[in-house]
Image (tube, rainbow, N blue to C red; front, side, top):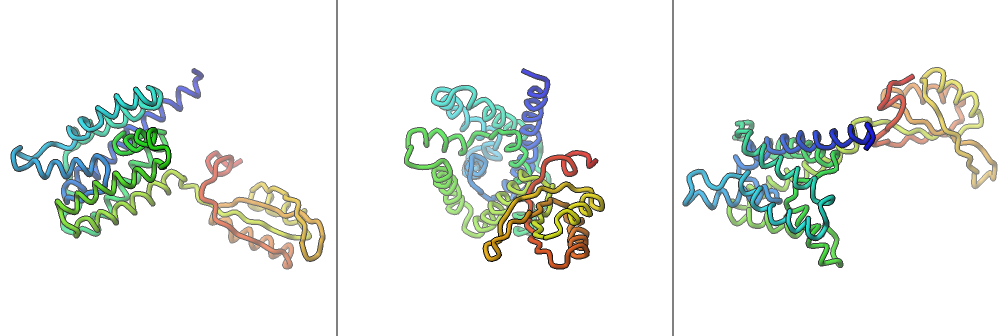
Length: 290
């Protein structure tokens, strides 16, 4: 294993450790405290904890439920998919159980269910995003869906996962009522949105396509005044049947105004198309701009 591969491996496991720690804050301090069930083993653990309070003081703790429910899945995963498939899920599940035990509930938001759902969704989304960036999972219903799909090839993993998590949410409705379930649905949406944005990166930018007859002058000014590179794409006008070069450039949001000014000053007849760029990797964005 090369030095770069080792660094990536360590970074992967550190992201899983960080992500599960962040998740545990949302689960212990908001979801469990306000009895919002959002699916997964953590949601099932909240239900089991509440139901078991009748004969166990404080109920069965979440960390214990998470660990116990995952153990049979680990053995099944190793048997069906192999150790390589299972090892990061084992690590993620153990980390989550550890953090659920170690991090005490923090009274973040107790009197505003909507604000609590929004906060929980953001916190959980960031945690899940970290874990996915580390190419890991926390086992649970994700692994259960993958193992079930191994036998039910006619269904996709997301379809099976929706059924499993939907069943957990439905159970939460029967135990805690529809009112809290609706707030949990808000948290689920925010979690998904936040995780997607987090994984896509924070290097948002704009992509500009410039169609001009003065491509050399326009590109020269953009390179000199914005210090951005361009790509020339050969294109043909369908109406005019003329061959021309279309310029493509990726700039930061703050640089977009300057780019449009440069194009308009150089060629007022130019045609500019601006698009959103969700993530950018490379020199000038994720590396030092030269």
